[in-house]
Length: 73
Image (cartoon, one colour):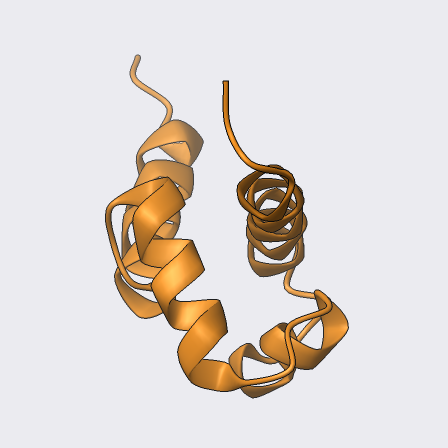
């Protein structure tokens, strides 16, 4: 139910999310590593798919990882 461009961008953003979570890529390198020709196109696609910017996404991920690592006795 979507256009090919939207589908491809969704896969690219999912790959970007994996790279961000793994820490294997600097945020500045994400657009190029994920197949986007410009940073602005990457940011627009990322926000459309996730609802937040890559920077905010990383903040949420870091909080989630931190809260998972807390062991309650």
